[in-house]
Image: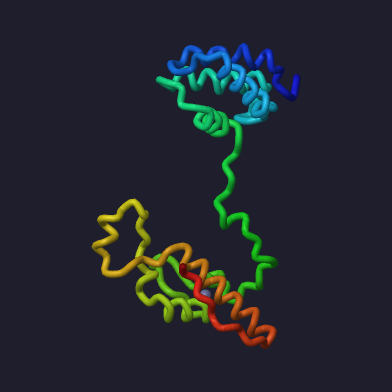
Length: 191
Ligand SMILES: [Zn+2]
C-alpha cells in the first residue's frame, strides 16, 4: 500500500468534482489533486484500513453527494478533517500546571463543591468559594444560548472560567503558604 497518493491518481479522483456545479476549471482539479496528495496518507479508523486513494475517493464522493455547489477549499478540507483528523482537545486540556498538588479534601477533591444537592464543602476550599460567590455558584449553569432565560435570573451564574481561576488562585495560595512566601498583590485579570 502506498503511503502517499500519486498525483495522477489524485487528478483522476479530483476530476469527479466537476460534477459539482461551480467546480469546472482544470486548474481547480490540479489544485484539488495536489491538496489530496498533501492530505491523504492513509488512516486506520472505524476498525478499517483506509488507503490514501480510499481517503481521496471518500472526500470527493462525500462532496459530490452533499454539496449543491462548490464550497471552496476550506470547506473541502474541513470535510476531509471531519472524517480523518481527530479534533484537537479544548484549550484548557493542553495546559500543564505542573505536578498536581496533593489533595487536601477527599470529600470534594478540592473542588469546594459537593453534589446532590449542589452545596459547598465544609473544607477550606469550600469555605473560600462560598465567601467568594455565595449562592451564585449553587445555581445550575445554563447554556449560553439560553440568553432569554438567563436574563431572568437575579444574578450572573458563575462560569467554568471563574471556577478555574478561583481554583488556581487557591492552589497558588496553598503553595505559597507551604513555602511561607508572601504572595504579590492580585493583578487585574479582566481586560
Ligand atoms: Zn472539600
